[in-house]
Image (cartoon, rainbow, N blue to C red; front, side):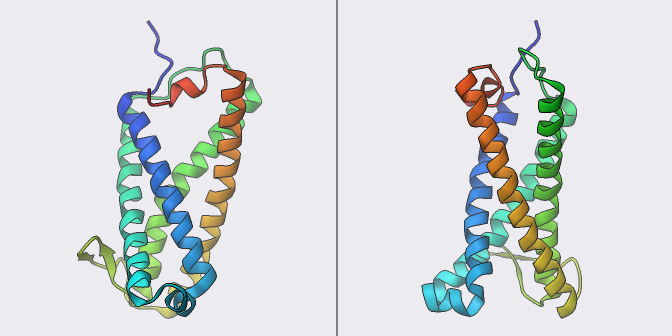
Length: 182
């Protein structure tokens, strides 16, 4: 008997990563929009420090969870659609998922590189991890810019992904059953 749902582990990872990504985007856009000084003026030193620390921490967690997700996906490929989707829907959905995977692995690595190149600590909860590169302010500025653009792309992909989810939920065509938790 064929199954049309992802495994429970795959579904849990999907939703846990989704919650973390929403939080990372909220913090990231706050830090990017206000900058360090603006964030300190708005929230104070303690909250600003916590925002940076937890943005780094949860970024690294997303990297680890995405690597687990890739491993699970290789071990257990995506279930078939029932009923089958059109070729265009499969192409767009597949492209969005590939971009999500690439960005949700690449963004934490980019953030790690930009942070280290800026001479800042790589915080993971209360631990400090080694930098992936030495101090290089120009590299840091470039990679932080790309990191911010990546955040915008992830936000756009989320809008597309959520729009498709709402469409399939309204159609009641079993697509949402594949990834839902209950």
